[in-house]
Image (cartoon, rainbow, N blue to C red; front, side, top):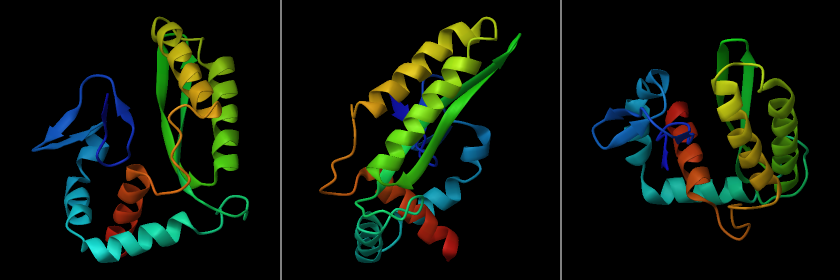
Length: 160
């Protein structure tokens, strides 16, 4: 599955393309210049910041690292309207699992109520959160993931 080059959300269909970059929405596509600038940062500067972030205390609970990007999935439905998405966040593994659990329960309770997409998207989002909760596809705690590298680079670019 393709991922958004700005936010990291998985793209099932309908990617917005800008050259070799892929985006999940027109809003993310407007940030293509940021993504290009982030990719052009000096490797040494970015690597230092990524390693520093990876070993920092968790911004949510204050607990020890390592930190990485944990992306929970959500879905909300009401009658003929369904909205779904992802929430990537830099945090420790414990906080990441808590996010998966909360988003899974939220989706399980509020995702089914839209026709027809609520019935299709809800099981998908709940299974994604369950997989994250069980550690399927979890980042290696020994080294920063590509998702952490991307988020740190984008934050560095935003500061400049």
